[in-house]
Amino acid sequence: MSIAEPILLTPGPLTTSARTRQAMMVDWGSWDDRFNQLTASLCEQLLAILNGAATHHCVPLQGSGTFAVEAAIGTLVPRDGKVLVLINGAYGKRLAKICEVLGRAFSTFETAEDEPTTAADVDRLLRADSDITHVALIHCETSTGILNPLAEIAQVVEQHGKRLIIDAMSSFGALPVDAQQVPFDALIAASGKCLEGVPGMGFVFARKESLAAAAGNSHSLAMDLYDQHAYMIKTGQWRFTPPTHVVAALHEALLQYNEEGGLPARHARYAANCQALMEEMGKLGLRSFLPAAIQAPIIATFHAPQDPRYQFKDFYERVKAKGYILYPGKLTQVETFRVGCIGHVSPDEMRQAVAAVGDVLREMEVLDI
Image 1 (cartoon, rainbow, N blue to C red):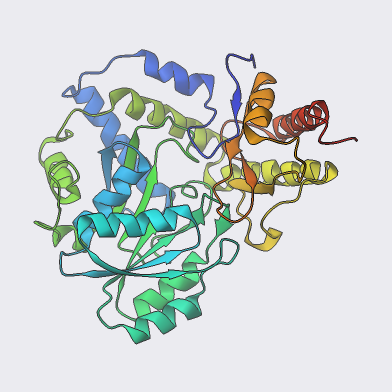
Image 2: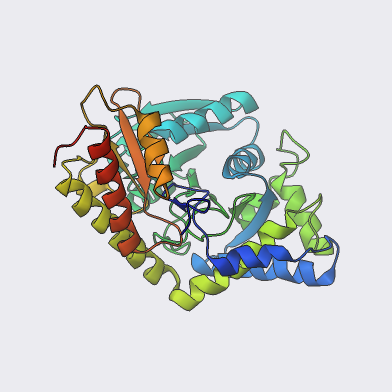
């Protein structure tokens, strides 16, 4: 891998395979039957990953993952609904901001950035406020890598007769979720994460009954998932110009996903990446922010070295010069940096990346080992 083509150890965009990049070398007509078949095949394969074909529709949407999150909130939460937003990081806060901007009533429950929300918390909060209609949860909070107990929370939400909206941006395709066992109204993900496509397309798995009842809810023409789905069913086409190259790349990435062995194999590789990362960083004396029990094998947060010679920008540029792109920290209380475990990379490449980190910290005279 040349310096001009670094390995992206980030939570997305991430390193893609040559086959996935090659798939973008073909131009597609947005009304072409072959492209419409590509979209339909894509949605079918995505639904299969979470066993959702019987109960949910897959509605693709142009834009980043946040576009799809906003579309899901705006479409599926009625204008007189109320959302309980569970927060332990930056993306939970973004969910609350979306509710605020859309004019949806909401309340928040925030725990520390290294503390998962519990099902008992949700049970207590739902008992205390009967106005809540929906609960919004980040499955894997990308700002730290913390994993929230989705299955347990989903059961509590269902017991209370409420609806669950899951931001699974950093987990879908790598961490198992079965739509027949985990009840949810919407699960949201994107092309440029664990499926190892390129960024530019989100998708929402929406419960069929909930989507059918959502006409007129949306604040936006472009982000109306009800209308997007209805138009696709009627014509086979996207309502507005689709990200054709992104769709083609994701379709190719899914072929490779299935060749690799699907979700179990993708999870196993990412877990091995994470283990290699933790072991090698530990040898350098760099401490992870989260305990292993709540660390998802998606992205890991590390405490920055406590040395005045350490400056993240200098550290980042030096590691980049050796062929690896890291990610800045996103915590407010302590200085950290993050390293992604996802993408078209192997445990050996993770070890090589940590060796580069060690070399850089020695060059900066931060480490003397």
